[in-house]
Image (tube, rainbow, N blue to C red; front, side):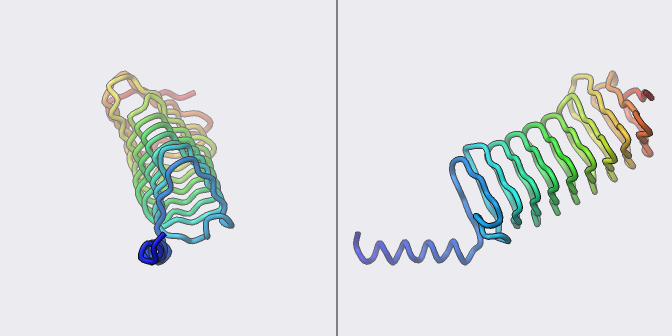
Length: 196
């Protein structure tokens, strides 16, 4: 290898280190010790990803994501399914598949192209989802509206949880089921409300 090539490689490595940005292709697993806790934005693509005990400025995943104990400073974008536990996302969240979350704080809007199941999670703004089921369990709270764009009938279960905003469906045969003290404080637009 020529001296000029080594210098170029050194400059590229320095640029990546200074920018705090990472792009990784292939399967990936991370812990705070492995990834350099507090790094900047990351793009991980082409394979399933598992992350834990870490912080990112922004995070883009090109496949499925399993994450535990993460803090994401701005946006989270996942093209596949996402399974999140003890995660905080400070800006918008977009999931291309299904979202399962437990003890997660979404401080901004959430857009899910599949189904959503939550336990003990907080949604600071609205939820848009395109799946046929949404379950809010164990003290989940939605401050904004829940909107569903699916032309099929949808089932939304509010189990020991609260929705402060309105809920709207594209299909009038859709239903909201309230269980174990579940509460809808807003209005139901275009659907049926059932108490169990």
